[in-house]
Structures are given as C-alpha cells and as structure tokens.
Amino acid sequence: MRIGMGYDVHKLVENRKLILGGVEIPFDRGLLGHSDADVLIHAIMDSLLGAAALGDIGKHFPDTDEKYKGISSICLLEEVGNLLKQKNYEVINIDATIIAQKPKMAPHICQMIKNISAALEIPEDSINIKATTEEGLGFTGSGKGISSQSIALIEKRGK
Image 1: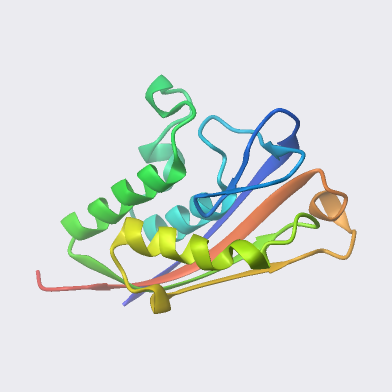
Image 2 (image 1 turned 30 degrees about the vertical axis):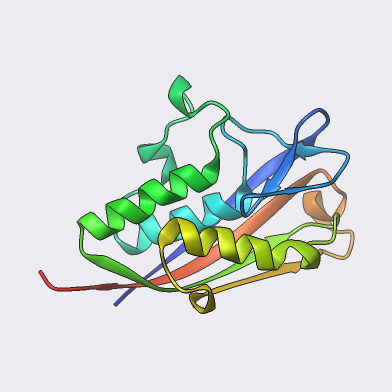
C-alpha cells in the first residue's frame, strides 16, 4: 500500500466559471488557470500520482502544452486513473478538503463524488470530500483564491 498527498491553489478572477470536482458552481468569479483550474481535481491527481511515484500533474499535463488549454480536469483525472491501472495500482480511498470562504460547497459535494467515482471507476464510498473556510484569514479567507488538499491510498495488484 502507498499513500500520497496533493495540494493545489488557484486565484479567483472575474469572467471564469467556477469548476470544482467537475461541477460548475454558480458564483461571481472562477478560478484562473490553463485548464479549467479545478483545484479539487488537481489536488486529487497529485495525491494519486505521488502515491505511485509518478511525479505530478505538471509533468504529465504541462501548462505550456496548448492541448490542455481549457481542458476539463475530469478528463485529466481519467488519464491519471489509466496511468495507475497500467502500473497495476488500485485506488483504495481518497480524502480531500476544499478550502474556500465562499461559495458554500455542501450542496455540490455529492455530485463531485459521483464525478470522481466515474472518472476513476471506483466506488463512491471510497471518496470523501469536505469543505472548510479559514475564518476570513489568508488568501482563501479574504476570497482571493481557493485551495484544496488531498490524500490518497493506493495498492499494487498482481505484478
């Protein structure tokens, strides 16, 4: 069994959609990035890649490559899942946290779990997502950005 952790952060800006866990969340701003800037999925991908010692998302999906411009992070998560399968790894569980002052995440967490479960082809009860604020402190607390953390457990199957 192997464990990995991931972290991502993106700045909130006007004229962008807010996508988290593959869900478009109604909000007056969205996250700035080369892809759809889904910090939750990015943190999860890094935790999975880290557990398998396969580098990070920048190595596999560089922001200098135009083919990833505006791409859905759920599509990238599917690719990470395929990389793990090629190396005979099975995802045991994922535990992730979204750190944002606003908007409220609770109404969207069920759909985020469904999206991640489908992308990785793992049971929904293998995924836990929670959200927290920072009580108005720091860049997330002041509403300048959103961050996410993830930890994942994987297991090698066969040879």
